[in-house]
Amino acid sequence: MTHWWAPGRNRAAFTLIEAVVALALLAASVELWGAAVAFGLRGWAHERETLNALDAERMMATFTAGKPLTILSEGRLAMPRPVDAEGNSKTDIIEAYVKSPNPPQLRLVTELGGYRPLIEGVNAVKFTTLPHDKIGFRLSFVDGAALSGVLNALP
Image 1 (cartoon, one colour):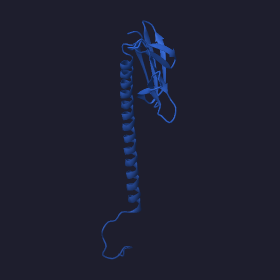
Image 2 (cartoon, helix red, strand yellow):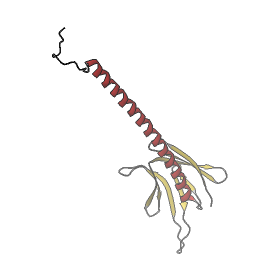
Image 3 (cartoon, helix red, strand yellow):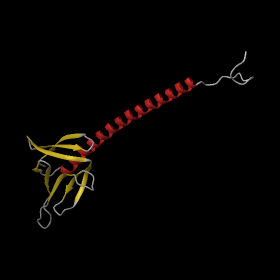
Image 4 (tube, helix red, strand yellow):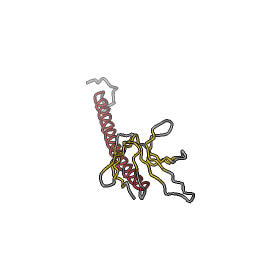
C-alpha cells in the first residue's frame, strides 16, 4: 500500500482542523483572561472611589471643624477665620473648581486669591441647610461617584 507521504515516514502530524481548534481555544482563553482582568479593574476602581469618598469626608470635616459655616450659594461655603492680632477677620471659601488646565477639584480659597486643593476629581459640590445647625453637602466626582455628608454649622 502506498501512502501520499514520503516512504518511511510514519510519525503523526497536526492536521489543519487541529490547528484551527487549537487557535480557537487560545483565542477563547485570551478572551476569558481579558474579561477577568476587566472585572478585577472594575472592582479596584470601585474600591478607589470608596477610599476617595472617605478621604473627602475626612477632609471636609477637618477643614470645617470648629468654624462657623455659612452657605454663600449652592456651591460655595464660607468659613470666617478667627480675628487676628490687628483685628482683621478674613473668610475662606470652599468651592468646586472646574476649569482647564487644572483638574477638577474641591478647593479652599482665601480672600487674597490663594487656594489649596482639598480633593481632586470633584466636578460639583452642593451645600444645603439642614435642621439643628447642620449643613449637608454632596460631592459629585468626575468618575460618576457621589458622596453626601453632614457638617456642623456652628462650632
